[in-house]
Image (cartoon, rainbow, N blue to C red):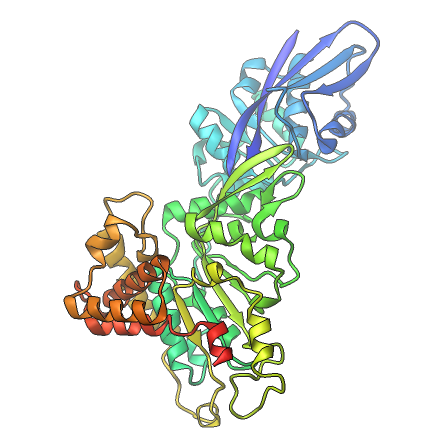
Length: 506
């Protein structure tokens, strides 16, 4: 007799259906799990055995074989505990087979039968909805999974409750979606004294989803500007919130409910390639994917290893990254805003007129030489952040707050949403390219002449040329102008003038 239960295996943010087959046959008593199980899956037999013993359910004196199909796909994670237990109970006649087969289950079992929260409940709920099945998951995961299909998600606290639900003795109520976590502004631009050009650049970046490079001496406010960027970004749209939560769910960070707050990730400069781009044995998402639809802030940018920095080049262009490993080959979305901050040299005082760098200009040339030219060319905005004047620090007047800036950013984003409504996959000016860029970001003749002169003088690359047009389009959107004029181009090119290597040599 073969009984079946269903669960999922994760490939990127997708959850592939896995059939858990259980067969009991005469022979020497044993409990085997086949179908390329990982270490945690192979250990499930001991947890299942102990959980059933806690419920005073004895295993039959037969040879028990669990097969995880498709058998050629690696299985990893402790979420296979619950479906293995359900398939075994169905084979023993404790549970009705039809009820078990119409359910996708996932959850880790403790030795006393309690269900422990596991990553990946959101992708599993999506697969359950697509296949017309209900989902059984641990109690702690129910509120988040219920956002996918609130009528077919059940969250028992333990194996006993799951058994009573499937046998109809004590049916569970469907899980209720958790409260949406609205975005909160915890840090305000009003806290920053001076740095008006830096604030303007962050507003443009937020309005058009542009990448920003901040260059300045220590203590000038680079990190403060970056930390306040999420406070002026518009909340995640429903489809963005779901996609972002799917990635968070794979790492166990989703929490209860779906948040509309854009992620803000700031990895340390000692992060490895796998930590940034994703990897490990099971090809888990890295920082670039966890920052999807949000901000990736990399402080002390030149201190990151060159190999780590160069892994950013493809994700910045395509908005996706493929993580290839021996036993996994998955693709994760990673369309983020990159904000990088750097000192101009190792000591940090090369650009500070009040303090001299004793190794200028060699110190700055060597330090900034750690960042490759192709990577630097991918920044839309390059902003010099000078030391804050003491007059600004001692001023009692409050600057413009995040709420006012966020209102202008929201209006500019609404303009872009309407503009690209007929172009799937494009929602901001930073994503426009080719004919779409020519159609919507074509400046007037004076602006085009200015851009051509700038390109000739500074040797602007084709990528840089297009990025200037995108920034100019965003500046015009912030102004509410349907056309791009010369002064829009002038402001946009001013953010390309700081090439750090050239700056430190001059």
